[in-house]
Image 1 (cartoon, rainbow, N blue to C red):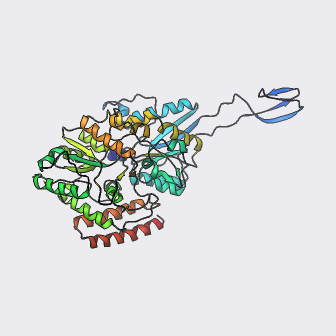
Image 2: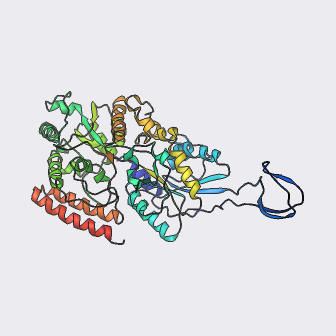
Image 3: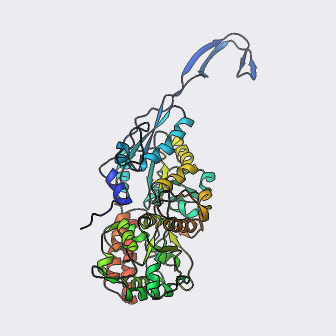
Length: 497
């Protein structure tokens, strides 16, 4: 069996899986006080003249230097020492331990420390997805609170717990709405995105033409997409996979990753699974219709293909190799596409009758300052100053690939944006520019922000997804599944645990 590539999610989870909470060991700045006697006329601060003969206390010395402050930063990798040599070389020791996070940390944090003398950062990894959520909850319960933390789909849960400080409106205005919605409540954003991504539709044009389809007439509606997928499936087959056309992640587990690649269809059709703040709407009108449409797409490929465990990189290879013709993809998938020599393109998702454009933000990492860390003001400053820096926002796309900038000023350059060194072919870069344009256009949004029990909700959703797809359910039976899921989610968002 061919060795499976290491994915972004696998790397993040592996780098921090076993790391628990860490306790900030810094001291807060202190004021040094001197008692003095004034017996003659003095000029105080060179502006006010006073004549007194009394004891004056609690006068800070003007030359007092605060004791060092250490900001406890939960992040994507352990970075114990920012002064050691890091370079993108598989033989470099820091690269082996930190991957591209090591280079990004050296881009982000030294300028902040130079601007704030006496301040250093303690950078530790705490895994990803449900494991990160659990680490954060355990730390909060134990009263071990960092200054800054990170996350993706679970950020809004912590926003609703009230543990974060808001960031400034001026900083928030530098980012598209969709990139900060997952950290927003009551008009305030409680974090900023370090990186982002957006789902679009990847099309293997060689397979498109193999089915007799015109590459100048790509699908704009759901009906056109299903018709094209069915036509491709009739002519595209292999001994290993059978007849194939459309691909997305199959159901399973308690991850939100599958939902990130599917729920744009529901948002387009005004049938969202839930609101940004986790009010469930799983069984609303048009939801069953959307699942039925999705089944039509899914069954243009075999169950064997959909359930394959080749990861994002593996599905990118299958796209390159002509097994997959159509797939929701984000900029990470374009990294894999860049490893092949494929004739391909990316477009915004076709839309249903009466629907509207929509996409899901993916790879949208939010960094948030906590209220009860040892350095709350410095934490806000760290988030604002590092993440509004264009060089920080550009770094991952230009080196690691996988992500795109989240800041408007760079996304607005999408048509000719050239800081995409992490994507290795012109085809891949063109596809990435489509994701940049889509992220900027205002039709992007996060997954629902469940207030609690998120992993259990995603497990219930995945179970239902499997029954609807594998059972090829009718609309009436799909609606019964949706009614049950709605009741389940309503119970879980009210239940402690």
